[in-house]
Length: 305
Ligand SMILES: NC(=O)c1ccc[n+]([C@@H]2O[C@H](COP(=O)([O-])OP(=O)(O)OC[C@H]3O[C@@H](n4cnc5c(N)ncnc54)[C@H](OP(=O)(O)O)[C@@H]3O)[C@@H](O)[C@H]2O)c1
Image (cartoon, rainbow, N blue to C red; front, side, top):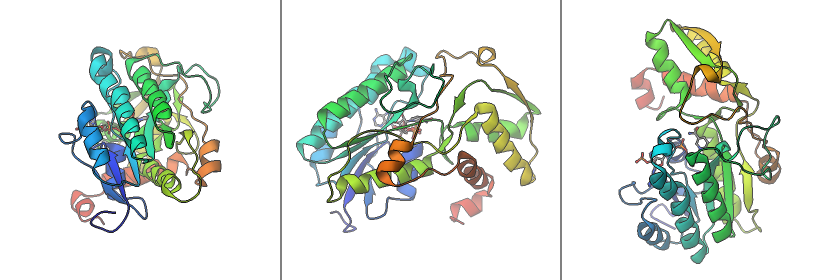
């Protein structure tokens, strides 16, 4: 228990998309404590141990990570520190204190070559430093804390930070035309919905019943391409009277990046829904909600209207 009288979750990555969603809407029945990165650096095992041991946390939620996929190729030590060694230290410290752990992970642990949505037990095969470091983080968490939920997600968007939906709206303000990749398939997922999924996992892990441990996939329902997501964003923007650019579908080969993006990022969520009783809503609904929020005048947004 902490000041609020509620059991507390120790959150890393409180300034990130998922972290901000958890702080804006704390899981029912919990208080969320999110030390700043200066206080709790995933690259500093002593700080992690100190924070985990400081209170009887109901769960540790690791939403912090090195998420800059391309930059990780030239910053492998930093990416591995945040994505593999940090989670390992968190898992070890939380297990020592009998505290369960929820750890966020990614579709980048797969190579993207499958022709169907990935299942949790499909073999991983990362093709990037980011993916390899996240896969190593998963292994460490699973090995070091028996009470864990590893939540893989993909294509995250939110009202905050750097994400595709915000980038589209920003570019749309000045560009007459945009070209968007149309040959990668995935499930766009709102950080607000991931926060609800994290909450469901925390309730089970911290509750009285024997709790499930393992890897779970959580993404919004349905699937599309980046072009499909951009189209939806601009349909919604146009409906609220915004000027929108003309969109052209292009191939990944026309948009080279240092890391090859997975052609297939789709994740099957049946295990998550069957275990936690929460069905993800369609990505279209989740995307509309975030677009509406981003287009709302700043003063209304600040007032929480
Ligand atoms: N974004 C996606 O599309 C996506 C897709 C699949 C899975 N995921 C996974 O979902 C989780 C959350 O992603 P997100 O989109 O919310 O990430 P994000 O917005 O990029 O935020 C990352 C967070 O991690 C923190 N962080 C980075 N390095 C750190 C370190 N060494 N020590 C402590 N904190 C550190 C950042 O702090 P600063 O603000 O100080 O930098 C920030 O709070 C991650 O595990 C990510 O791998 C994301």
